[in-house]
Length: 402
Image: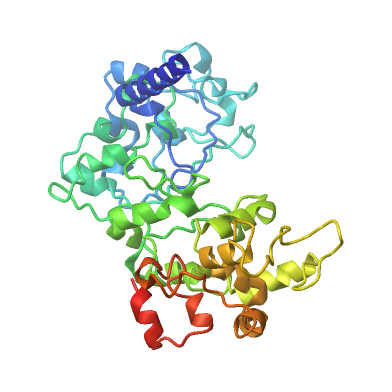
């Protein structure tokens, strides 16, 4: 077991080092950079070694101020070197046949091209390049004016064949400059801004921008996130407020509609144990006299009635015998431990069930109660059990208050 764990740690460290050395290996958020379709054959390294500069093909990048600008070169730009209209285009250097660049295309002749290098209407139609707009705010012009080299953001393009979305800058790359000193560090410097100056998270009907946990313990894709998000919220509340307003929290924590995926799939079968152990604050979301009773009634668990002789909600010995020393199966033990659980069925008007016995017939206190008042405490219920019979200002409770 230890050996397997050690191997796993080594593999994780190795993968982390690989990403650190090769930024193109780091995953890109599909919500920020949508998937592309690039049916084209191209080699950036070969063009750069021939002496071309980035601006030779991407001249519009110098003045571009929006990610919506299409900065890939068109036929007219390529035809400056690739003589696509020449009769022997396929034999020239550099090659200029249609099939040279358009992957999968098997036809096309120089007669299909205009003198300026643009395809005519009669030209074969190759598969179109599809580069959806990146969902960020970005200005190439601003970065060029600041003297930022192209390869500082587009790491690895100089040794790549076809540049893909894996050559677009990652958040790690951006934070190298956007540290609050050299460049602004507000999230909305790059991320799209919604109402109230917060990050726009619903980017599409099925796509939401979510933190990945790479920079903070805030991986929203973690299946445990609903249960563990409290720690991240307490650690960095400002980070949460970059996307969420106070109302977002209250919708869940103080709202009427609760998220059912907070509990595991088998919750109906196991929630009774958790309720008795008090490991969860059920009352933070549920009203015992409504939520619990509605479900238990549907399951035929009606107060005072059992579905059958073989199925009992309470164990044998629940009522006990007056004067006995109660054990864990006795109702008094469970009432002192978690009276809220009892209230799920016997709360409200059901309190009369307790008072029927304890108001006169059966003294709930043991014989030693009056002898050693200081040895008895409210217990876990914060006096809830005591207040079923005693008023809060009852002087008899003074000796047992914690």
